[in-house]
Image (cartoon, rainbow, N blue to C red; front, side, top):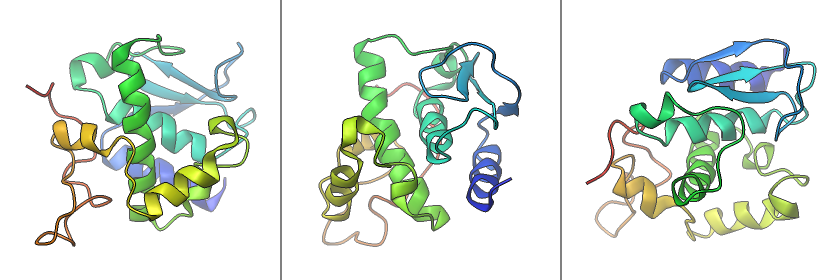
Length: 165
């Protein structure tokens, strides 16, 4: 396999996101990736972009366990999953920084309607799309003058433990 993919798979396993390498016969939203009952199925032969694995793992990681367990196939177009998309973007950026991977691995030129480069630039400039939702879920803190080393992209928890109140 690929060194970056090996690093990603080890990381998601360590944080408790389950995955299995398997053949996926049907078409999926992202080639080679499918959510099955809160687990990530990965077809290495169909996978186009390694960073997509990290982003899809972020979708699972950013949901509380009772929702995560029910996530299948393509996600419904609901407020929950639209917010989850923003959270998964911020989460996968933080994961790239943590794993010392280039964020363009996730935010590649053929993803995000061609806006991947701008998304990375926004994160690098401290314009944190999705981070307030991660803060609300207790997964990270916003950076402030007294807390520069502990703010995003540093994560307090890589998985959402419970529904925020």
